[in-house]
Length: 138
Image (cartoon, rainbow, N blue to C red; front, top):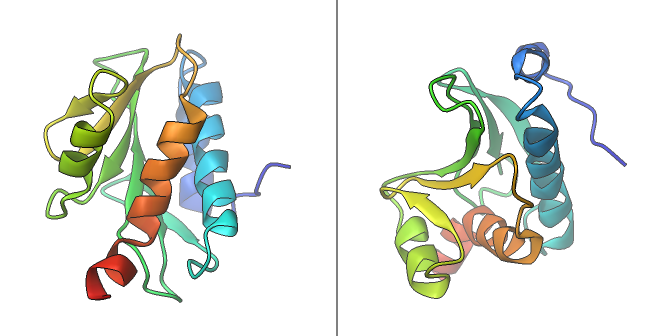
């Protein structure tokens, strides 16, 4: 079941995604919520906008680092799951999943809308971000 968008700005951003990438971004959004619900200690997510992009925060549990979804019109079929570049998350994913995921610097996993999302791998990455502060602390 799809998680409803409560934030009007986020709804507007999703409504504006081009048809080539919109279904994939909806799928990735739902994977974020499903992973949060299945990961102990994360709790509910807050969905908001950061830098004009949908962002997912563990405001109540403070267990994790912010995730964002990005699409740039200059790359019509690409979209990305963004991570805080001040963390070691993308560096870790690059080590764990060489050749399986496409990365952009220290801040993103980049996907092509024409390819399926590697759900199990990406869910692992999402869970790592949503528990980043908890694991770092102890």
